Amino acid sequence: MTKEQIIEVLNHWNFWNRDIDVGLFRFEYLHKLLEFLETDKIISIVGVRRSGKSTLIRQMARTLVERGVERERILIINFEEPSFEGTDLNFLLNIYSAFLEIIKPPDKPYIFLDEVQNIDKWEKFVRSLNEKKEAFLVITGSSSKLLSQELSSILTGRQLYFEIFPLSFKEFLGFKGLKIEEEKHVLLNSLKIKKSLREYLFWGGFPEVVLNKNEEFKRRVLISYYEDIINRDVAQRYRVKKLDKLKTLAHFYLTNISSYISFNRISRFIHLPVETVRRFSSYIEASNLVFFIKRFSFSLKEQENSPRKVYSIDTGLSNMVGFKFSRKFGQLAENIVALKLREEQAKNPSIEIYYWKNHYADKEVDFLVKEENSIKKLIQVCWDIGDFETKEREIKSLTKAMRELSLNEGLIITEELEDEEKIKDKKIIYRPLWKWILEENW
Image (cartoon, rainbow, N blue to C red; front, side, top):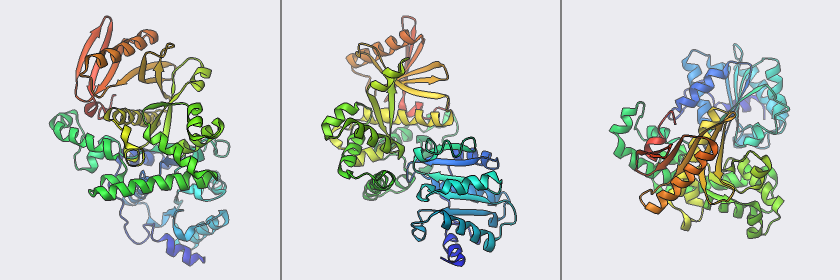
């Protein structure tokens, strides 16, 4: 392509001579990213495909223009643009050269590289510009492994890492026109919030799905997201030959959200060696389709050897792709709680999330939250707490963990119950999910 042709393609993605639709703003992410943009760090934005990364960088660019930054200083390159298919490092250099020669940025440019994992050796280009302080740099990608572990030696000390998720429940409500800015808004809109929570549990939080009312469209979109994640972010990237086995494993995880999984058992179930199951699982997790939570133990060996619990990055994906015969509201509610905790962990990297089981494996707690060297919270999820035996079981597990870990307070998240009670010297707090999930100080 000539430089003129390159600029013609880039013009579709940039603000040089027009405004571009930037969708509904996700202000919490936007403010944080803009806060760090003009540092000497590379801003790395990672999240599952279609979670809103491309829209977010357009919102960043739009905000810069509104703040007085010249449009010619902003370059957005979308590497999923069909015209750029097969792009390599040399072509990336040609794109940058065309930008400098034809657009002529009047000052230090802001460069946004979207879905950068599609370009071989892109990190050399990014590192070079960063070392020379030639541009403010933002990169996005769908693989957490790509932008963190694999590049730790190349971009050490140079990048600030931000994880983007599908819409939180608070954002979901905002996209539906219901702004929750104060505690009174929760109470005044309780009926709408409860109804919306059911919708959120079923359809999840992908922006395109949330904004469309056609259920057939939603189903087709979610299935297409899943196919793109498996085929492009896993199979193609890692050159997986046993695609049928990979899909069987992904289906298994999306069907069994909020459940214990063991690589040894799965290996017997899908007839794959244990190490292949472990490797495929790491690929699926790196694509951000699912994530795993380990058992809490002071022994790292016990943590690694114990079963993990699996959660989906979006309950809508699980409901459309997983086998639905086993789906229960309790599983979906627990998955939503896990997502909320993951989001908090992304904001505060010192947080660690586990599940807890005692040594006899007859007592368990869904979530243990550790911050630095202290265990901060124990959280049990019980959607229907009305049954006496169920309530007794949940309380016994929670109080057992509280005693072992020297905590005086435990939380049970329910569908409706809001209460407190004392069990000897321990306090149990009951909070309905629709309230808890909107709390800032969770």
